[in-house]
Length: 192
Image (spheres, rainbow, N blue to C red):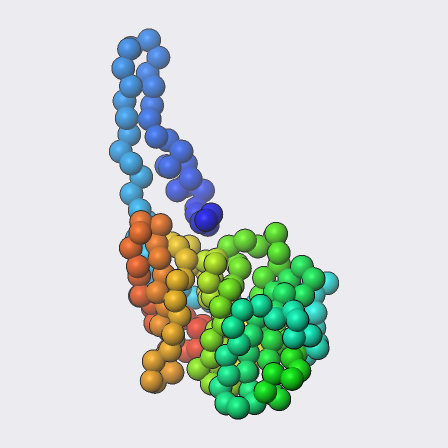
C-alpha cells in the first residue's frame, strides 16, 4: 500500500548507499529511521468536488457496498459507489431508500490514500468511515459537514467508539507498530 510521505523522507530512503568510484569500497548509510507518529492529527473539511452527486441525492440499494450500520430501527448508514466516487449514504426508513449524506468521500483512481471501506456510527449525528486508505472521515452533525483526518504514518485498521461517545482509532504505522488515537470532538482532532 502506498503511504503519503514527505519529499525529505523520500530522499533519505532513496539514499541507500554511496559508492565511491575509484577507491574500491562502498560506504553504506544508516537505514532511514521510522518517523515518529504525530501527537495530534487535525481533520480538514471535505468539499464537494465538481461532477459528483449533491448531498441528498437518491442512491439505489444496488450501489451499496459492504455493511450497513443502524443507530435505531429506521436510521442507518452505509457506503455506496456511484460512478467514479464513493459516498456515505443514509436511510431514515429502515433501508428502503438511501440518499447521499454529504460530499463524495473518495474519487476512484485519483485519491488512493483517501479510500474508505468501512462505516460506523455513534448515533444519528456522529458517523465515521475508514479502512483501505490513510484517512478517517467523520461527521458530527448528521452529514451536513464531513471532515477528513489524514494519518501520514500509516493506515487506520479499526475505529470504534467508547461509552462516552469518543472515537478511538488504531493506526498501523509503516514500522509495523499500532498507534492509538482518540477524538473527543467527533473526529475533528485526534490525539495520540
